[in-house]
Length: 163
Image 1 (spheres, rainbow, N blue to C red):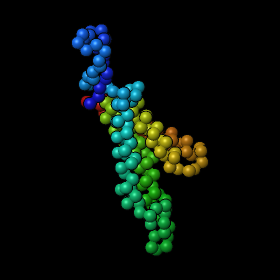
Image 2 (cartoon, rainbow, N blue to C red):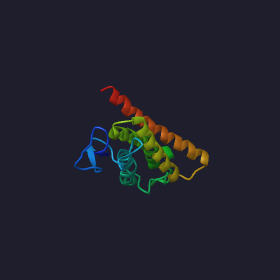
Image 3 (tube, rainbow, N blue to C red):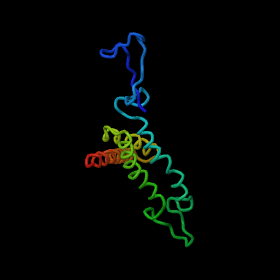
Image 4 (cartoon, rainbow, N blue to C red):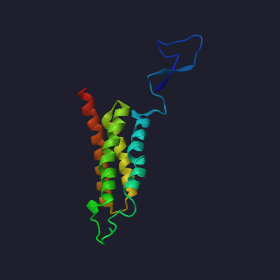
């Protein structure tokens, strides 16, 4: 539940018995819940759901033997697009940003593009810190992830407008 602090000295809400006291009214936002319209809890839940929680299942699926084109029993190398690494790259570079942007926008309920953009920016930071390539590749990767997060917020906005 979200709260806002209101004073009794405000016009229209004067309470003579308790001057200077504050109260929290339901339906508003408190200082930890929102920062300039960003619902931090919505962004954190979305990032956890699409970046942190899938790490264990993806690690199990992509066992160390098959990761990055390890040799199969016949002695031939598996191409990178057929290895388990492509699954992880697809997840963290495309699916997770779109999903986290969508979920952040859905949970927030307001400003869906802004929440999708924030989820994309944080996801872009994860992607850049995870890799260690050239700066141009890292920049392109960050822009891709940010745009995917924004796309997820846009998907929620379009879906919510059609209801």
